[in-house]
Image (cartoon, rainbow, N blue to C red; front, side, top):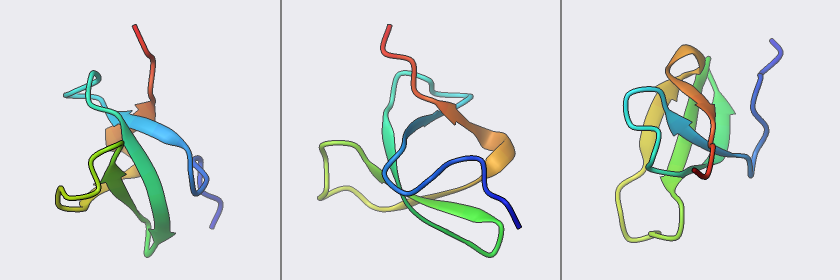
Length: 57
């Protein structure tokens, strides 16, 4: 299966586009993401349809 985002890509959720996330792993059709620049926060998990490339605006 081809994934749209690669490990290390900075993405955001479509419902919260101002919160950057860093893709850590793609497995079993889901993306495991860390909150960018906040490693102490809990890992977040999303389907591909829920995330997009982060737009810093």
